[in-house]
Image (cartoon, rainbow, N blue to C red; front, side):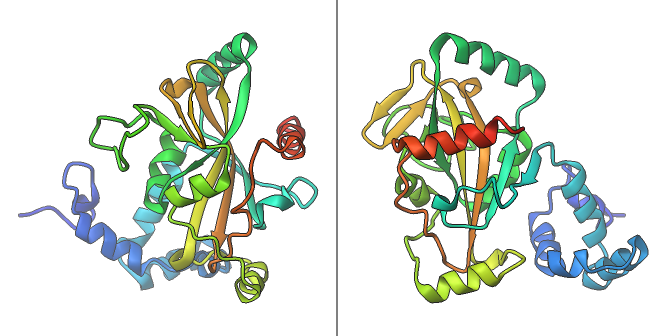
Length: 248
């Protein structure tokens, strides 16, 4: 007999089409969080797809990142979204090595943008130097390494985010308690060791992946991206980042 449907989602079988089918059938986070009990959530999942519950549990259990939504007094209002999070993807050993390098060379703040489908890996593995590997998505015009920018507009383009900030889009965004997966984009603010950091205008490349750590994560929905013009050369923005980082 062939593999069972559950086995088709294993790393050995890799039935990508089936995985996409299950993901499309998955109930919304709003519906899941509205469940009255674990049994009720299991029922909601089973109604969506027989494999939905197993895939959902794997998504949760395989996530190694520490993600905490920022409180109202911690949020960077200049980023133009209410969906703001502390994002730690490094293990203690990598964090310690980073801090040692920080003592020697100092650090800078920079954005990292990437398309939505890439964040599944980033949340589990941190930012990687994918240049020259099968995981590379964009070109390497500025060299091999992790691509960053002090300008939000540059990194927004890597996230496929536009510069829309219309009143209607803002109203929909601010009224939303849950993200709309059909109109969602993500960007991170990272702390970067200032050693062998290649700076070509608004494009920075850090060839050493251990010299880049995610610190904050911003999510945009309903086409509202009011933080598009932010530049981290602004001292008050950097002070905000330092202030909130010190609280964790």
